[in-house]
Length: 306
Image (cartoon, rainbow, N blue to C red; front, top):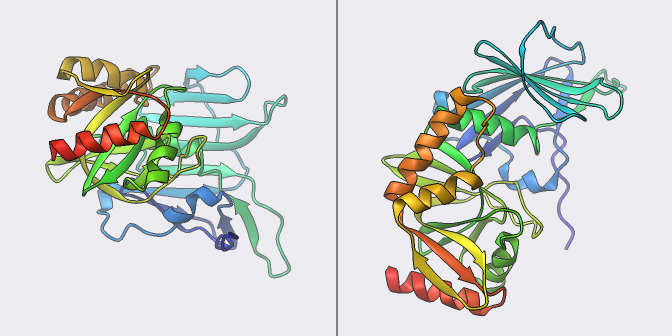
């Protein structure tokens, strides 16, 4: 089935209940080519001012770096610096040291100055920029945004079943995409993602949001629901589900949560949120066989617990 083409412009995104507004200079048209973001284009109508991320676009006149503290360097392309409460994240062209783009933001990432090259002017004087507001930049910004707003980005699959969201965290290879495909094929619920889920404290509870950040199954979803439980995935020879105490759940949640360990001031509130989440949400170990019987095991368990 052929998908409709993406819109020519991208002025706003809505991910995890966060409204991301793109503010270009006059005569510049921002464009987002990645089709995984199709469901997330547009405003979040219910978003309050403090829940928005304002992204102001600049050209390729890169901001002065000054003499900030180096937080991390991948050694080939990624670098992140900190100067007091301000951060600078850049992606360099391989082998050149010249930046493809530079993002500057303060603690909490409520406002981002994003510098990236604009295309040449067309016949009417407009210039097009292909937004780098996709993986991994948007995930890094979300990590900082959610840290101060009682939220976190979790490496996990998720679905909505009977009005509640269930999240399936796991490291790479744990079976998130495999289980997601099995659940989707069985029509077990509304899929949220097979790779990344946003968890946030909202209205006195925890809410799970789908994201455009898909895994190998390519599953994304823009829906959300109150979190009903967390099932940590393990490949096994038989299907079984075991309850976990809150301390064990917290220990298993930390390694699958996006946490900037290189930045203790930002890591601390995320760690606190995950500890509180583990203390208040039912958690289980889901040992499963990668076949349809795993879906039967899970849905039977959810039906018995509802």
